[in-house]
Image 1: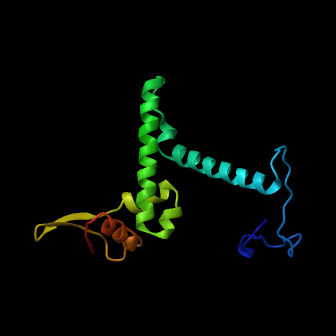
Image 2 (image 1 turned 30 degrees about the vertical axis):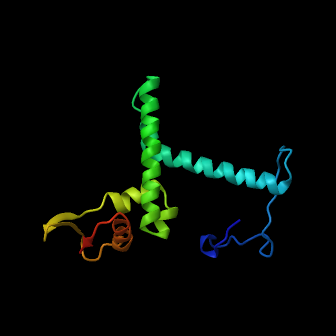
Image 3 (image 1 turned 120 degrees about the horizontal axis):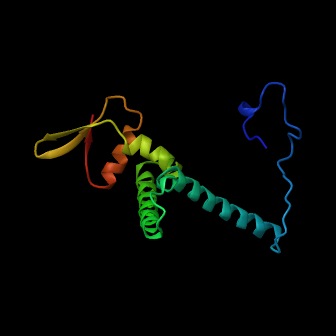
Length: 146
């Protein structure tokens, strides 16, 4: 089902434009509404796994169990901290993947300046994620300048 007409290729229209239903096949003993909620919960977990595999879990360092267990612990901590930073930054970053948060907020090109006994980050003048990063740094108690 396409929700936006922009994504429809030329010459390929919608089969039933007036209906927004889809077929469901399941062997779950749950009622349909409960089975759909269970499926959505499972889909959220799969997104978390994809997010982790896009970062630290994509490169497990060893064939030894204890090393991988420590790596998994640090990966989960890093993901949760990154998601928390995204939530503090903006509503867009609250829903963004950790890869997007890393690229737009954590891997920022900036200059650290010391002025009036205060450390400040100086960013390019028209940096697109300036507002989100200012929200983030204000929430953790720092100040940014352009």
